[in-house]
Amino acid sequence: ELKVEQNPLFLSMQEGKNYTIYCNYSTTSDRLYWYRQDPGKSLESLFVLLSNGAVKQEGRLMASLDTKARLSTLHITAAVHDLSATYFCAVDIGWNNNDMRFGAGTRLTVKP
Amino acid sequence: NAGVTQTPKFRVLKTGQSMTLLCAQDMNHEYMYWYRQDPGMGLRLIHYSVGEGTTAKGEVPDGYNVSRLKKQNFLLGLESAAPSQTSVYFCASSYDYRWSNQPQHFGDGTRLSIL
Image (cartoon, rainbow over all chains, first blue to last red; front, side, top):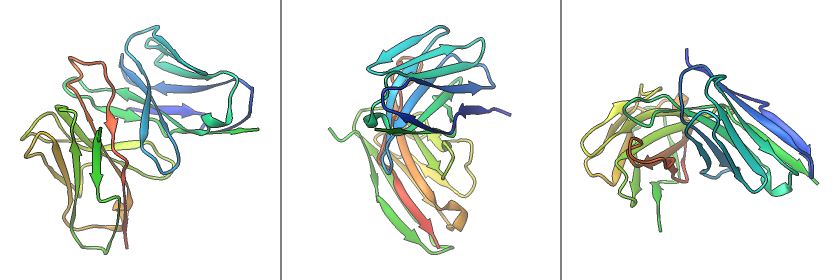
């Protein structure tokens, strides 16, 4: 059975601190996505990781992909309140379509 | 710059009623998708389409039907609504992933309650 597991599911952190969200998946894939969702809103694409060893950074967020370990990480540097949201990883398992399986999400709260 | 537009945004149905959710995209995307999102869970794929006139089942297709008569539109139908179908429904679209590295683009969602 395909599993996409994120941890932690809930994360409360202080502003200025660093932390990492993990996304493990159980099937072969070389295409992984990170999305952000604010409460009651749609999903916003953050990163598209397309190969083993891929690393992408945008502001205080950095994502990486290790396809051999079937692991992706989303690292938060010096968190600020505006980063409070739910973060989802999604693994593309399709061979003829963009068939994504989502993790359950990590609800991040950054406190002043 | 509309992107992906879903209608309606909210709807309350009684068990057994039918309804259709509409998704429209103006980005000339080949692929379109319907997901549902339940509390504490990520999105789950209901049905998808890889082009006009085509549809296919996703992870949780039971109780739903879809149609894609025009490239820009993807309809999700509930023939006989059940309380278990209470959820937030998201539509998404994308280019053919074999030729593009772009992610899926999502609509704002439809919050559906079945009483």
